[in-house]
Length: 585
Image 1: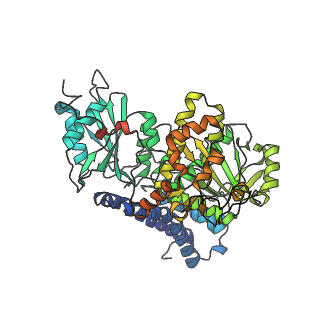
Image 2 (image 1 turned 90 degrees about the horizontal axis):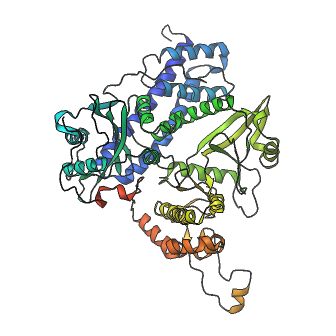
Image 3 (image 1 turned 45 degrees about the vertical axis):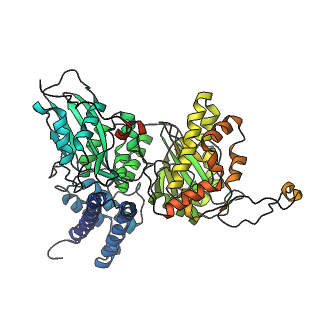
């Protein structure tokens, strides 16, 4: 041990394990810039999937190393408290202390086989502040318009990212950007500047430049997606300004960003000023640090339970055949358990259902699949469960729950942000509200198809409506890759008697799908039929799905813009003259 105590040596191994994890995380995130410059879009998707696996692999490595190098069974609780104390000492000048604490928790709970909530040997609360951690280079850069105005500032901003690919016409794009911004303030304060995060946010085919224009005490957040044009040169595609649209940009129903960050807490703090309705848990998850997002979610949940009194109840909507879903009305999430016994007609098992959720975690969700947090041994206060819900849990998922003193331990569940089930939304919708949401429903199916996802069960109840009116799919037990499905047209009956028979006159094998049948269970409501057929009739034809399969198999990766087409500069005429708001006095 070279004079070190066992506690010091174990703490050193733990911090080395975390440092290795974050070094690899930063390396793959930094390579996002190179993938963007090379337009290596297939590599982009692969890298996002690989990065998700990093954390658990590093935790397993660290657990194995500790078990190999130390006699862990000989350590008592006092020894583990000393390990934690020594570990805290290693975080004093660390640039990612909050992530290191979460890594410590992940390793120690696996070694000691104890849950998060009843373990006094881990970090139930953060011990190291992340508010004033210095970063080199700084987390954001400041630009001052001075006499040359915002136009010169924005040109310098985009050039300072030093992409190896040239811009097609940056000055033209900046003129369009400034025209969209307009003149937000009649009077410019002395503290007039633009603050821009030092690293671009890479997702799919775009590099997002994020920042805010500051004028005294007022701030105007913005996001500018940079894309490759048809000539393989760079172009500014739009500027997103409105708070709700920036919020959509950070939706968890999309792929996570790749960002090169030395101090992730600084990026999260900056993003909170841009989109204050997004929690810190959401923002950590969106920048690829899902375990930290999960840690913060659970801490927030415990705090909410401490300050509320309502009970967990069964979630509203049609009961599922596979999942038992409950919610806390005052908290905007649902908790989903896999039942012990499935409903009639469900030919699947628990392992298969879990594999579907794992699949969703690794695909590009294109804004149409709900993101989930997966928990094992989730411990909640027993007295916060309604008697009716406890009866349901004991009847439908007894193997998934265990009473431990005054707590209910849920052995395995998924947590999703709560949405209004689409069937409930439609039941309440006015005539003017029906068309836009039916249009959204069909668009969700189209987006998923070209992203190689077939929902399996297209019933309205399996989709939800978000607070911004977007339709998202959230029932994953029958989800499949589109290319694994055999889309067929129903063959003509051999005789009139066959058509009148209750049995099909044609053979059907696993993964055969007949789109003509969708109308039978989707379009019984005349309010929905006319609108659906006007916008999405081709979804009832096998040729639509077969064409999507051909495009996917040919390697086509479609652009999914998390902002309206109307914002795209290519859909706007070029400004007649250069616009320079913010020029000198």
